[in-house]
Image 1 (cartoon, rainbow, N blue to C red):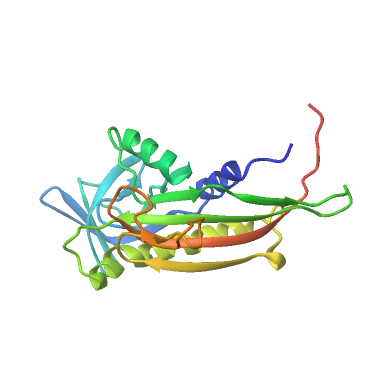
Image 2: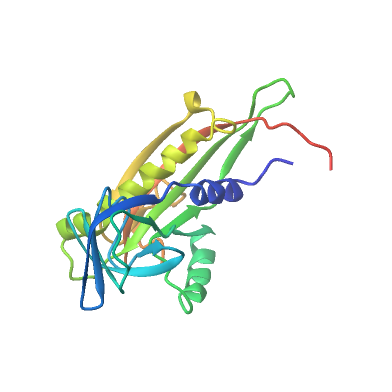
Amino acid sequence: MSKSIPNIVEEWIESMNVDFIGTNMINVDGTTSFDACSTSFAVVCGYVIVDDVEYEIASINGNTITVTGTIPIVAELNWKLKLPFFIHGTPSQTNEELALHMKSQKVTPLAYLFEPITERFKQGDMNPIDREVDFVILFMNNYTVDQCTDDIYVKSLNAMRSLSDLFIETMEDDVALTDRDGMWYSYTTYAKHGFNYNRIGSKNGSFTNLLNQNLSGLELAIHVPLKRQDKTCC
């Protein structure tokens, strides 16, 4: 049996390269600042991980990240970003699950794989392509209602674009599974509230809050042929 798309997408997310180098560290009043080679998809209230310890991001100024907590000063800091929270399902199902998760943990940045998912399977064991898949994944972060659109781009949307680019790069690097020549994708950006149901199954095409949260982000629509995998006996 072919592996499910949610499992494949989750594996791609978990294999994203989120390791970075920091320099010019400073400790001030219970915070630590450092210059990052790249801020990638870092956002305020997200998390930096150093030696398996999570530090909440207090501010980002250019390439300088400040976190809450004291990290020992070193010449080169090896740090990583906490991976986005992954969830999949229909909007109504996902809203219910998110409400439960939010009672015990932070769920943004969020990677939401929209369902239903379309898969078209190829016939014949000699065909190198197992199936062609169309799916939509949304990378989202919180915003506050008093933020203007430009602020949302600076503080959130640019990071979600970096996260989307990293996801695509990870997909393309999975050459054993992904047929890059037949793959295409498109971005749609939403600064506030709604995501366009026209692209993900709405009957009326209206802009509506997809999830019951104040979220901004990118809708990434992907078409990808997946290569046939060798069958092994169990």
